[in-house]
Length: 206
Length: 259
Image 1 (cartoon, one colour):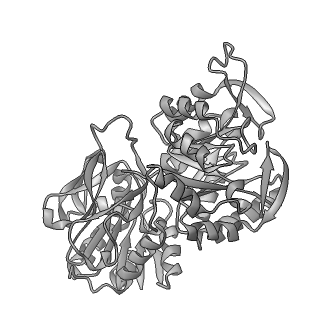
Image 2 (spheres, rainbow over the protein chains, first blue to last red):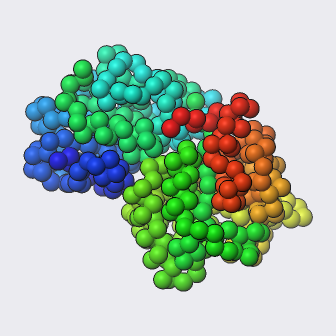
Image 3 (cartoon, rainbow over the protein chains, first blue to last red):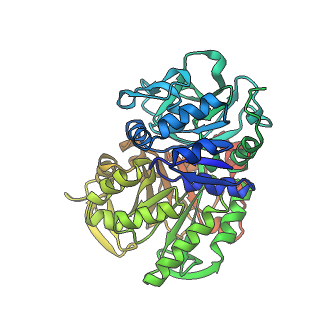
């Protein structure tokens, strides 16, 4: 069973529906115990980092995510969920879960013709192979909606990049964690494929 | 680099697909979900469902349509038509719509834009505006006037000013629909689109008037639109999603070609 972490972060049912469409059983939960019993966890998110972290802490999900990460449960971060696996977010100077060293930063100093938030379909370039990116080719497009992006400290943690004025990390991971800045649940067949692979993933990078 | 988006709008009346010409003479032309599914499979980038139902029973059918779309179609889609409150917006969002379009009610009560942005996020709050050319005057210096009630009521409100105000109030995206061009198939109002796109820092979806592929090219280049909305070109089978995207791609407009 896949648990989808619910922390009042918007439209979680779209992740649940996308999982169902590829025959993967998933359920939204805000109960830390349920999270710890799950085989896999999807940590999604739309919204602001400070309110997301406040909500995760109030519900005990913040600690539960830390335990699940330490126990080796396969984890998939999406959008704000991805930004929160780093140590800190510039958005409201918010401390994150710190699973991976690095920061979440805002798009800054872009050509004024480039709009922020970065909304729409954009291409990924694969930085290093990962089982969850199997079949994804350089230039394949995914759907993005964000004004901040993850900036892992270690190059080894970057699995894909995307360009919007600046080349940023659009997929990162380490061990049992994989996380995307784009929304697989809104990215057509390419996104559904990623969710399908996550449902079978062993939780290692090779 | 972001791709330009091909968006299709499905007018839904009592759960059925309808198509209007200059905002009148709507007729039913099929099942909206079936159409949406076909376009999704052909590589459409985004969908808009516009509810032109007046009755409250019709509104419940719309929620049902939205839920069914959300369980079959995994690209962003927005819903508009008759949204008067944050509750309407939240209900549609929970039913699975990525974005919600406000139009008439936002002109009458601009705070609705901010309230929606606070409740569902700017990225999900789309300001849709119906615009008609008028004699420039003090209230409408640009000569582009906002009209509401589906094109029936001119508001003495300048469209360029309204676009800027909408952005400041929290809208994350604009749909600019030319009532003069709507349904004519003679091309978008490129000047209107460009003037608004240059006035705001949020994405602009051009709407109204598409009849040939070159119209899309014009509005995405000269008109500076981020997305082009088409309806009858696709609904009546004159063109496919793939044909339109291939046409644009071949002329150097960046489109999402693999999906």
